Length: 216
Image (cartoon, rainbow, N blue to C red; front, side, top):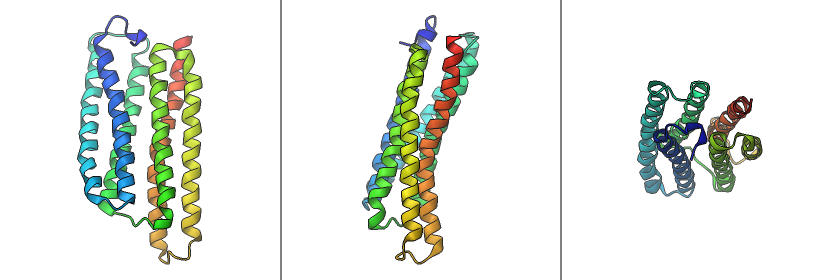
């Protein structure tokens, strides 16, 4: 599948599993937060362990990929870029897990009139990650296609920024929320959800540079 690994097909399976772990983890992140916003705390907590298992499995895969790249002397001209890509990709699932745990521990109060805004923010943040994964696959197979696909990552990250801003404006303009500390708490969690999209965009920006290097 990945033309960059023509002489080592074994590593392809680990990279593909790694990418699928990220997709599954952010899907669970979205489903779980929506359950939190709906007050379905039992279901929300059940998904926490699943996300943590995926994060742990991804760490193991990252190590295996790194070991294989260096021990088998694969793609010496590109392996540093591949490793950098895998390392930053791992940050996406790390952040999703940490944000989820913060919701579990701190349990912020999401007012009914903010639920749809938080749902929208979660959706576009996860959408940013889902646009990133095809960009990664394009890097290995068709680097010239990376720029077009990364454009979608930037688009959805911008949507996440807008959704985050809408929440902040509503929160700080609200007279219903009397405690400033509660407003700050909501601001904090809006920023945390949006940080998933921010990290996806950071990976995309690095990916653009790597793709240009592969074409040279």
